[in-house]
Length: 425
Image (cartoon, rainbow, N blue to C red; front, top):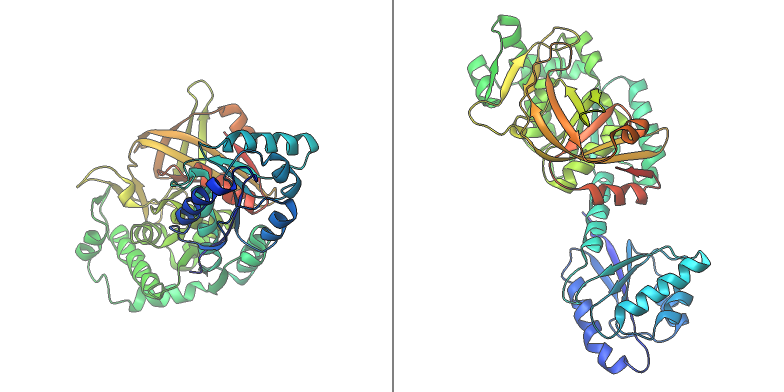
């Protein structure tokens, strides 16, 4: 994957320029330790025109290091309207000048940057978060989406991805469900129910029967086929038109989705365009499989939501050897759904509304799972929100992506880079 580009410039007043050179060199060296293509110079700039020229190059991130005080006028003249990171450090009146420059630009309505603060020997956390967001978006751009769906559904996916990602959208390769039918008939593994059960360790049948056992074998044959397809160097995102698959094959892709997520492949239910953006972003940012779910219930009094879907990655469960159940699919009663008992702990929720170009984010905590509610999809979680539940419900959509890593800031930054309205709770 091509590394993000970062341009660096440093500013200092004439009075401090001698002392500022060493501090600027340290800051420049710090950024060169990042996984980025760093350009620019540590030599302090003293004139607005020179700073404007230094920042005129195209780059994913632009960083201006405030090496000394006495630079607020220079900064406010050169940075008006520019999206830059203004990096202040703890000495030489750096922060006072940065704050003064920001105040001047805010007064004139020209402030578009972000003020960050750290030692010149430490990368500011907000800058690191922005870099992670850029990397995740680039990884999504370079991915390939394999969509097992109709041609019309594939066109809908491409249009939705284009409306949000523009030229940075990944390639979509459509395949019909007949390909999966051949995979079920011809795949070499698994060959037995015992082998299939070992491939999804920790999940036991809630009820036994030939139809369910065959559904497990077929689902894992689909997963093995897709896993082999995704074995090249390119990141692969897989999605299924779940109800189309039910009609054509008589089984759901729930087993395949759970298995693929457990093996590092981003798998998305229902050929949903919003989650085809969010799921790989969350996977790339967290390094862990996310969970896609419906918002099924809520309680304003308890500040809780119930999320539910008929599959999840088994490794999201806390215990061994028991991780949950294999059971009939909720809506259809056909094979096969996963009731994964998700571990308790802090989570981030994200919901993307493609038509509104809106990203809704919230922090919360999984308080319980394995709820066993008959009237809901099989994997269920009770989530307590940190923020205003009523305000969250007023803005959010149906499908949510849950991750156990705190990637709240990175997701917000990715959303803003895509031109989305970000509603953070």
